[in-house]
Image (tube, rainbow, N blue to C red; front, side, top):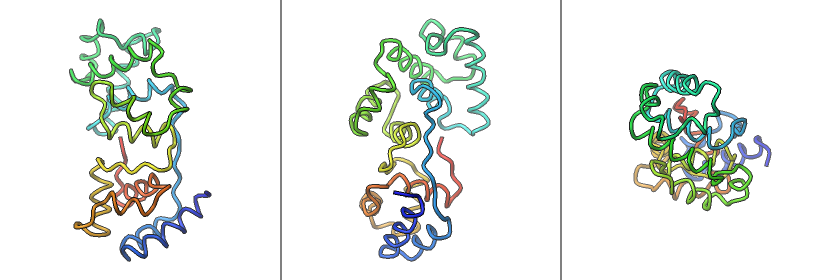
Length: 202
């Protein structure tokens, strides 16, 4: 469905739920769900883990150090337990170092191939990703939305999206229930909520 058609549908759907929500979506105009599949999935997942709970500037600086520390070695080969101290010196926490090394190990074993992951449903993909130590539901939601371009993900664990939807509707109404009204394009609802508060997902 074209972005303008999605926008029109969202404005109409929101009007039956809350005038404030409808007005907010109408004011923002159409939004676009863009895919970041310019990087191999394992690389993008590692970078996302490294940047979690950090400012954009700090995340970029730390990841730049990680890439520089690899030199001419492919990143997925470089992210391994033998390089734990080096990765920690780049600014990665102990937990993040363990997670990116676990991701890279699976990638080296052929367990995170892009084409195989694309062939999965969002639910199957989430189960595969969250089985990795240190990778949770929020991260899986972000990967499904921004790497795989899944249009129908509602990231309930994202505080900004959830709290904004509550403010625009009702704190007494479960956001999962509200978001269900916007299926099968719930990813766009999250985009509207982030844009409304100018909160960028990691």
